[in-house]
Length: 273
Image: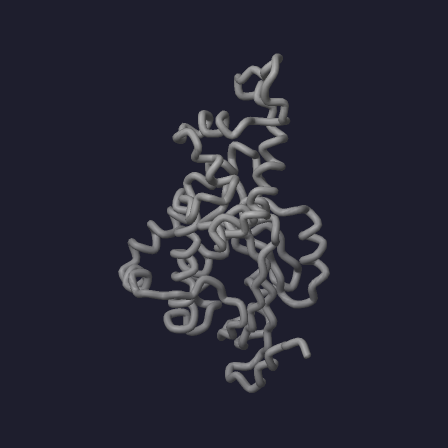
């Protein structure tokens, strides 16, 4: 626990909330004059025992439950980056999921221009794997440029996807299904992902694969066989990253090299001198 940083974050955000906005009256006589909600008022609003919030803000609450942190974060109106900081300061770990269910569903519009400027195939999906932006090189991957609206659904359930993803049974499905499970772990109420899971479980082959343990949560650095609509069979190297302000959203850059047999050597690992 980073007590100093935790205290500074919570005090600053608590001071921004007017007690009157939650039905409290500010004392007019002698007594408290500090800005914002009092610690006692926070306990009342969160329906917690008196002194609970004081323990959290003072750093005397070891391993506070994430449910308390989430309630405090929402009461104080923290954004996703502040939510990450709160969990790091209080628990020394990443948050178990986004603060708001709507997070990761949108990104800044400048990402479209950024994606257009990439020469390799590139696209951005939201937290439900819905396509948000892509460049022309990515569209060329698909017959007649028909880009799928959801890339997770395309990889797992679309027949055309299975034809494009060479050796789908061994090189793609066992790698993609754990990503679906990981996404649902972070967002158990995501209706789009739940529907994809439901359809996966109706397919005996995929259901068996889905129940197999798999720890992969992202494809960054992977190389897999792929059939390009224009260039034929080849191999694609996958670079994956996340827009920082949209947890769960992803940027993918796909570097394609034609050839049924992998004849190129992988690029060496980059490391600062």
